[in-house]
Length: 330
Image 1 (tube, rainbow, N blue to C red):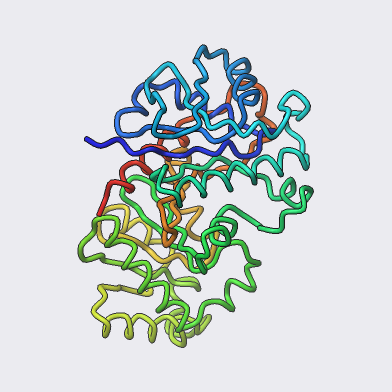
Image 2 (cartoon, rainbow, N blue to C red):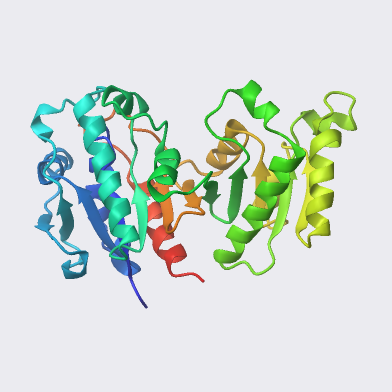
């Protein structure tokens, strides 16, 4: 079986990103379907190995094709762009924000050059980005800008439950305003197309309701009647298999048990809570619509844990695995 080269930018080095990377790469099972390639800085990896007590070799590679990609060694594209020992754990720092940005920028360039097949990203800190003068509010927005992709799709996956998001990092009041017939139809069309690229020939999608019990036919909230139902009707006319709106208190459970291939969540926390309550560590973010697959752990920098060697790497392992699976699909 072909093992995809998975680029892993180290993220904010004041957080747990480097620690979960070295822990994940200490697990030989990660190498079963992937060739992990860290994009970062050598001193940061050495510090992470010291903190976690792991004994792994660091192999610096100039060309991803020349990596070893075997358990016991970490293959690294070394940007040598930050002094890790001068970056304190658990604090917002411009140096960490700038380095994280540069790690991602190089990782994207390697993907676009065809040298890396997919990305599995580690946490960044938005305040550190701002301190470094970087205006992108998150990974997805940054990746969209670097690749010229307008409004990339975010999908969460935990086991077989897949969830798309109609909106991401906006206030709840703004998220409700974004629940429009045109936007819902656009996301249903793009979501269905994305699922096909992931190997689902005829996707079955459901739309979560916005109001309690789907608004009870307009008794308390009319967004379902005014925006969601017309969008779903139009999607069906286009040949898409779409159900709903279905109350958010049941639709995710139904999808987890096989009734649907994916759910369209109408705002950030609606889908986040549903997936993370299934299994927090195994909930993986997948960015679709880019020129390459990107997966990510779905937790933050965990400044309160950084430098202690106690962070759980299961989510990082799962992100690498899923990136390899999807980069070999289609």
